[in-house]
Length: 329
Image (cartoon, rainbow, N blue to C red; front, side, top):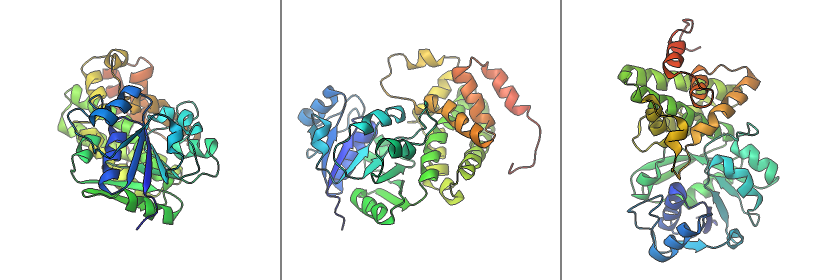
């Protein structure tokens, strides 16, 4: 049994809404706050979130909060927002309950991982990181889903896993906060590259090579930052990378596919409400890698295409023209 009986959720997007439903299935009281009042009203009155989870009926027991202050009595707060919004929202979190970050990215302005951001904004607060291969649409439909929860407090990790486990939703806990945080960030950048491979019609061989060499980049940076290889080859690393590079629901992959077909980043994002985390994370990943002298050629090419006006075909040729080397380097 766990004492985390009341879960607060900050964020009414697809994954925040899905976690609210999973929390209810796990027998918890759930209170959700969304910055978008139309989303909160729809959840409260219609038991729907047609903007982010269209066609999915929601648990009638989900409470919609009008203000963040209503989460003060919660036993744990899940912060389910875009990575670049974590700092601002964390400043306003009420109470002293542990915070579980469910945002996958690196802060663009500072190059900090999400738990590092929380350590600055909420020093002394218990923090965990939830990540892994988890499309919201599948998780909320009750399809089998496994995720990682990372925290330095093993007891808290066990309690969080127990509080969120519901039916086909299975959390595992670990103390490798760096590995879980980094894997979820880097895989978004690599998924854009995978989409480019698809959109450019480069074939299945190229797609397999991209995931494999992309994982090598993730592992190089992760090990340089002190992550465990076991974590990087687990759910929040390789598992999430495979899903995001190949899954049809991946927003990062979809952006890459559009780029591969000649659409610009600005044009693709016109009128879209959902964030594509990899676009903002790409330069932050490279900034962190540069500090450690870590080479990440695929992520470098993605950043150049997204933000530096690089020609797509020249970027691909540049990757293939790199000096030959022994595998594992």
